[in-house]
Image (cartoon, rainbow, N blue to C red; front, side):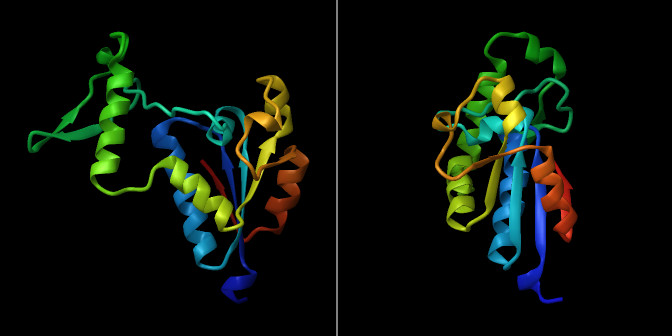
Length: 162
């Protein structure tokens, strides 16, 4: 089977800054390699398709989070998450690091996915649950449900859950 006929599907369930990168990087890379890619956005992952979004990062439960600071790698203790503004500060620090290192922003990766003709499916049930309409989303997503995704997944060579 040639790479052009291969396909990949990704279920995107999380919409935080750190969880938004893996599905978009994998999708755009696979699309650049000639795979047909479908991303199914459900629950909190749906927020990655919003026109207006400000993805944040949380230090809570993120024990592997270590940011380079002053020549060291500083970990963020869970206890810090209880302090108001810590997650916002950690988000700003991460966004600054992303920019400083020349890593594409989530907005740029979303745009690359659309430009690469990645099929974006917004979960209809989640749209209804959180009271979103297509007018709240970027241009490009289609509406679909679990059956739409399962139909796609049964045809895909690679299925990922992120």
